[in-house]
Amino acid sequence: MATGFLHLHSTIIIIFLAWFAYKTYLLLTNRNEALAGLKAKFRWVDPVLGVLILGTGAYLLFGKGDPDTYLKVKIVIVLALIPLGIVAVNKKNKAMAVVVLLGYFYAYAISKTHSLTLQKPDVTAQLATGNTLEAGAVIYKQECVRCHGEKGDAMIAGAKNLQITALDKVGIAEMVTNGKNTMPAYGSQLKTEEIKAVAEFVETLKK
Image 1: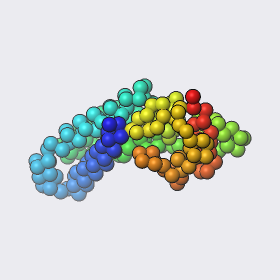
Image 2 (image 1 turned 120 degrees about the horizontal axis):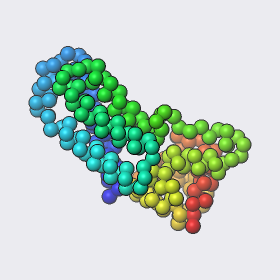
Image 3 (image 1 turned 60 degrees about the vertical axis):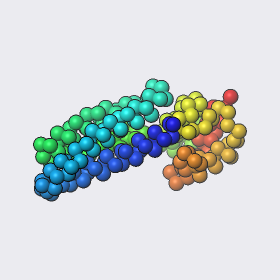
């Protein structure tokens, strides 16, 4: 079920962003009649998408225990922006609409980078000094913990229990590189040394 919620949540967010971006475009280009017609015909879209975003987001957020700070902030931002976006469009407030749109993209970027500063951690120093285990722990927390959990046994969104995996470090590194099923491939995002560091850290989670 968690896997379905994850895909549903991501799809709804993309639809919601596109929907609000289109309305903002109509507002900024002074196409008020088209905007009014859109609102009259599809007035149900905003509340439905809003409820779906918050519902699926809450399920994924609190289904893994105490959420990370960036996830809490993202939820607060989205909660604040949904009503502001509705007001901006209804009042034809262009400046507010642009601010809300930027806020939505910021919240989306937070969810992708898992960071309020939109920056992924730099583990170059740890790798340069041979602290691969420390580097692996940092990357794991950034990229893996949301599905596997801090101890590797959360099994969110179809994630495998890393505490009982039969894969060795080579197999884990291959899985991280290429992905499988709901597990995304990180070969294009992480360097070979970083993937090896993650595999080394995952080995420490085994029971």
